[in-house]
Length: 240
Image (cartoon, rainbow, N blue to C red; front, side):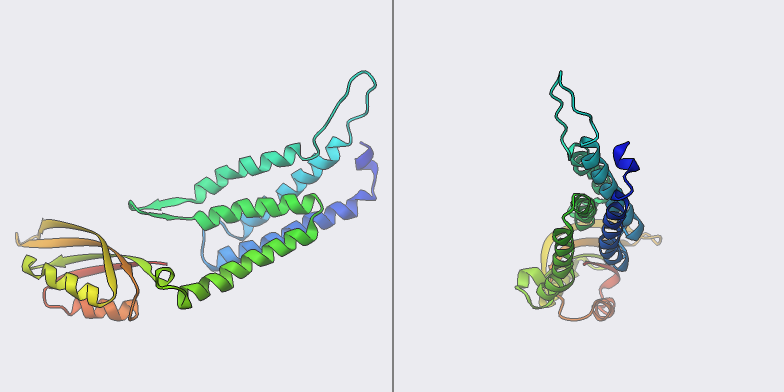
């Protein structure tokens, strides 16, 4: 109760919580702008409560009275250490598996873990380190990563894409594959199945998984594909 009664501690505690909140807003706004599932509110809650638990963990270690009959040793970061383990449950919930090959949400899960780390760092008194870490991560995400996506090696500029075509003539499958290759696409996987329409006509559905270095906008490519005489329908999904 000595620490609670010591009002001189309150300003420092409030500054720590407010700083953790401010730094978490940087992460939260970035996730909100990109329409990610973990946004402003979640980042703020994780960071500020992690900061609070770290403060409690540190201060509680010094509230245990000394005893002469037994050696009591308290770890100041014992409670804070459990935050890192517990936050993994939230991070796992942000990771989604799409189809068989695509996993999304890894960056968001890492941001959740990062928000907790910022709260712990601020709660332990590492203000400059926490601020520098947030700014460094934001610089990589907002500046370096987009720059590499536009001007980096070909492999980094390549995007994953999914195409679903319905053809009326199976003899035109090779023509379609040749057309996609001329557009700078590398076929990673192809699934073909025969389907029957309502008029009992046979059609052929081709499900492509591609690595693409687009030469033209997706809308223009879609228009060109729909004008091919042997293409009945087309569906395009570009993974960002």
